[in-house]
Image 1 (cartoon, helix red, strand yellow):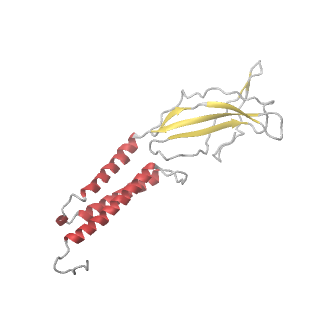
Image 2 (cartoon, rainbow, N blue to C red):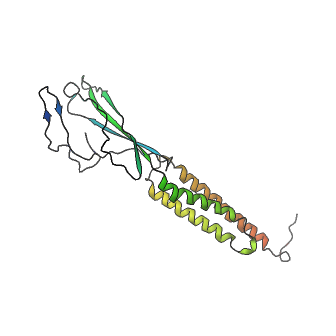
Image 3 (tube, rainbow, N blue to C red):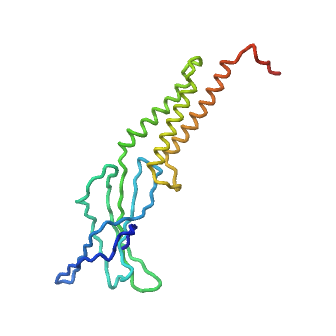
Length: 216
C-alpha cells in the first residue's frame, strides 16, 4: 500500500513471522495518511468518512490472498474534536484485462463524527444572539442617534464570525456549509436593515419647511 505522506517508507525492514502451517504474519509499524473527500455542508454537525485501502500491485490473488479481519480499536485514544463512530471493513476483488487472476484488496472505512459542544458555545450561540440584536435597531428611538451605529456593529460582528468559520473549515467549493449560508443571509438582512434605518432617519429629520412639494 502507499501513503499520502511522502516521508512514508513502504520498504521498512520488518521480519515476517512464519509458523509451521505456512501462515505468515507481517506487522510493519507506521503511520498511514490518506487523502479523503471532506463534506462540510453540515458543519459543525458533520460526519466524515475516509477509506484506507490495502492491497498489492505486485502479486495477484493466486500468489497473495488477502483476508480481512475486523479493525482493532481497543487502543484508540479519544480525541477532543472527533468521535470515532466505527471502522468497518470489506474485502474486494478486481479483475484487469492483463491478467486472469483477481487482485484482492481490503478497504477500511474510518467514520468520524465531529464534536459540536465547542462550536456551539463559541460560534453558534453568539451568532444567534448577535442576529437577534439586529431587531433592536428598529426598537431604538430615532432621536437616540445610535440606530445606525448598532446596525453597523452587528454587521461587523457577523463579518468577524464569518471569517472565523472560513478559517476553521478546509478550502473547498464542492459544497457550501449551511452555517456559511446562514451567515451570508444574516449579513444581507442586517445590511438591508441599516439601509432602511438610514431612510427612516432621513424622513424623521427632514425639515418640513425646507422641501419642495412633489407634483403628485
